[in-house]
Length: 401
Figure 1: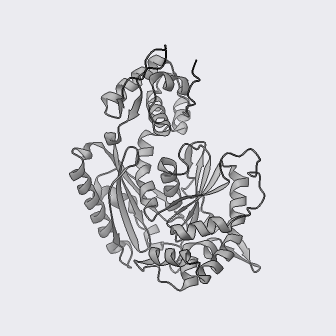
Figure 2: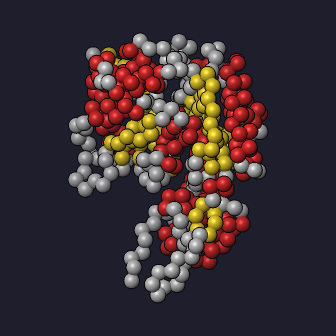
């Protein structure tokens, strides 16, 4: 007899009134594992075969799953695998950064369909919001031209920008976007697009992208160390993105570390903004990514000296993240040029001893994830899909009260 295929899936529930959760469990299992039969899904989710069959029939009618060719193995009963339909849903993601904004459209499984970017004016949201709404409109029209009736399956708009949210901001702090923090962004985007809009910080968005199509795909416990203009941590805990009480979980860039006896925020020493200051490069330069990538590829001494200083704090940050969250892995991701990110990962060795230093590890303690300026926009687009289709155990707990 063939061994049963190991399948990763959340547990469903056979209690009355939880069909929405069970639908999400089926979609999540197909997203993580690829095509599965009804028997596979029942075994993995601990739902009855009849419940699974009812849900699959419903998802098939809704255009979210489709049957593949029947599989016949040995003397057993033939089975029909089901897979997600990429065109079953679409979402738009928006990144708002200090000097640039990016918009991207994806399908249900994270395929990028179209994208566009624009420079943001220096006067903040007063004129920048018009640029942003025009950019979202452009991507939305391009999506409509590519996919007939995409509007009917557009589940929302996800926005991402640097945090923290809802805290006092100093107008002259280059790491903070004070004017944008004080602007009614969600209300303006919802009114301007007619879509459901969600907001998360850029580190959380990057973690969402890694979970959907990157190094955190299929992992239940991972920390994504986001290296951008600032620095943060996206937290995937128990298979869900953890945002904290105010959406500010993982804002480690604000953690005070001792530098020459003076407590200094981590991002003042180990972020791309600190690198730009070190290199005296204009962060608004449109060729910035290529320039830094070239310098890192050539082992420019200025890059190496910055790395030497930055990894001192990054090693301690990694140690603390492992100690507090006990993740399966920590993933370096974000908009850092690939050559720079690889140099950083190499320079982090040897890692500091921690509870993650286990002899039976199958996943590296620290690894490289996405190094792509579009990663935050991709994660922002993945967020509405996650909100629409991923299991939410907090909702189940509330329903049971």
